[in-house]
Every structure is written in C-alpha cells, then in structure tokens.
Amino acid sequence: MTPEQILSTATARGQDGQLPYRGAVTPQEAYDLIQGNPSVKLVDVRTKAERDWVGSVQIPSGQHLFVQWNLYPEGKPNAQFLDQLKEAASPDEVLLFLCRSGVRSKNAARLATENGYGNCFDIVEGFEGNKDAAGHRKTVEGWCKAGLPWVGA
Image (tube, rainbow, N blue to C red; front, side, top):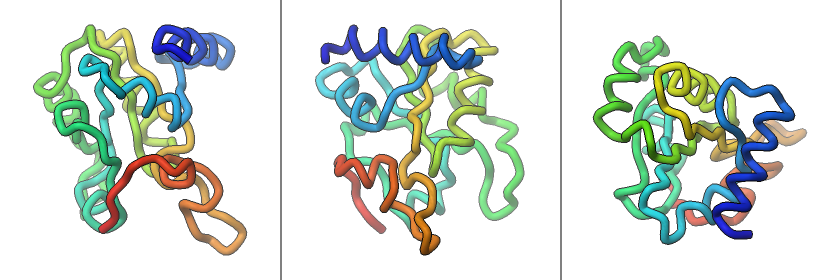
C-alpha cells in the first residue's frame, strides 16, 4: 500500500473505533510509513529502562523520538511529556506512538491530539505485544513478532 492508502486505512480505523486521535496503524504499516518519509516520526513513549533492557525499534534516528509517558523507577506520569514532545516534533508531522503493548501509546496519542497535534496514530500491539499463555511477550503480536527491525538489550 502507498503511504496515502495506509493513512486512509488508519484514519478509517480511528473513525470506526471512535478514537480520540486520528487513527491506528499496525506495526508493519508504521514501518512502511517511516520508510523514505522523514516527516513521519515514531514516538516511543516507553521508559529509557524499557528501551535499554528490552530493546528498541531500529529506524533512522531522526525519525525515532523518545518521550517517556511514565518515569522510571517512580512510575509517575511524566509531567514534562507535552513540553518534550513539542521540542521533538511539530504539530503538522505524522506521529506514530509506540509503547510495550499499546496502552500508554493510546493515552499519549490522545493527549497530543488534545494539544494541537492533528496527525496522531497509535501503533496497535506495541513493541512487544500482549503475553502468551506462558506469560511471555514478543510471541503473540507487536513490532518484534512482526519481524520488523529492532535491537535487543
């Protein structure tokens, strides 16, 4: 699919699901959007500890933004989230929000949309996805399960 088709499909998902942000993309769609399109940014909202210990997507550094939703080890919300997002991205860019399994990224996309970012998309399934029957991640869904580029800890 072309980037325009991906965004159209993602926007339709947003409308169908009555999402409080523009839409939702699969990990593969997110990766496809990023390829060759520097105006698309992936905003990883996981903690630095998660990225360091679990792994991180491997995409061009200029398109990979890090803005923690929660702080580690406190677990408290990042009171500077919007200020840090404003430093990293402009409101007219396409922003793809990523977390571990797709919960924090939804909240981040909602908050960004409420504050003037009109092209916010959640990456469904997140980086690791939900747990399998044995309690392990990266085996059911998510960026890693999709076989997309990432580096481990």
